Image (cartoon, rainbow, N blue to C red; front, side, top):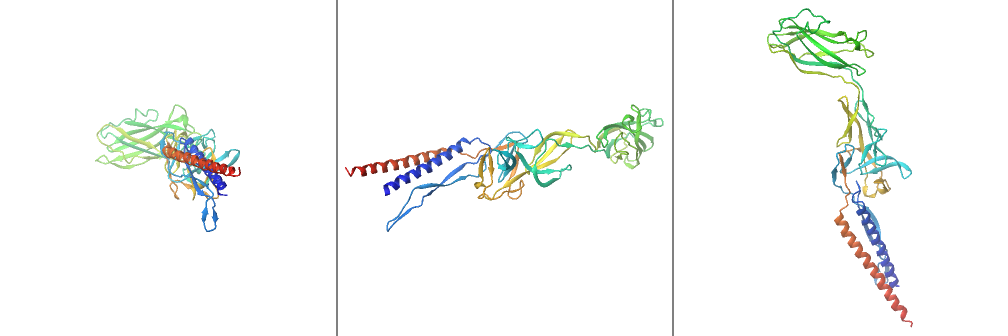
Length: 415
């Protein structure tokens, strides 16, 4: 009977609008949840019954789908280097235990930190997935945990030394060179630090002695305590050579010989001195530039992440290198992934399988470090939807009460 049908139709409307109110409430509750994507309810009509020659009568409505709205949320700066936001398509990949289940999960929430083991993790402790880099900073292709917090920088032995200086052309010629009295038997000196294969620092002083017109000799000395067979406190020559200049003060030739044997390290350690920028003018002797290419070992001081997800480490010895790369996942139907709680998402049959790769490639978005993506919930829109759902619920309840009144009238006919 159609009166009973209207009762069921009204009931279906109550249930559908209740679902809409629940969805709106969920959106509003997560208005401040990082990386949250709002949802909307899609209604459809119920199967209808056909009346012979009289068309069709519907049986009410039903919820067809609760659809995720995959739009970009606003980015908010946090200043934390490990906070990441995705600009565009894609999801972070994390792995670990969630609700008692160990597996791979996906999220837009980039609130990451480095845990005690050195791994990059989310706030639940799930490990961020990416591609590790080798000691030379070359990123690999195997997906796995990003262990970045315990990286170190290996020492590098000095191989090349560069000096740029002017040697005073009219300087007096001192007494014959004596390693025991280097300052008194030279015209000018400068110092720099060089490193052996263990990263041990050695103070090297280079002395320049004028021997004639346009002719100089140089001697590099280091403390014998750091040298094989040396004596602490006694300067030992580790390199020497000659320099020749023309009448315009330009360097025309240079010779050198090196005998650097650092204690307990690689012996001998070749040292190549570059004097190509040296000049001989009448101005006072002075050094304008000195450099060497070695360094000691170093501990990780800070990390930074670029738009492509490359995680770079800066070390206490002044060096830096790429430690790994954050991976992003992309779904062909991202609105069909399922929510698993804790801002985590999982693949479904409807979403398809994730394709994982580097940010900025394969349709995946780029990363913004030191920022987080806010929820895409529009509170004004949600309140409008709430009003519409409320009115729909009230109208459907009115349908039920009206049908009930008519049935009550029908029951009085018999009296």
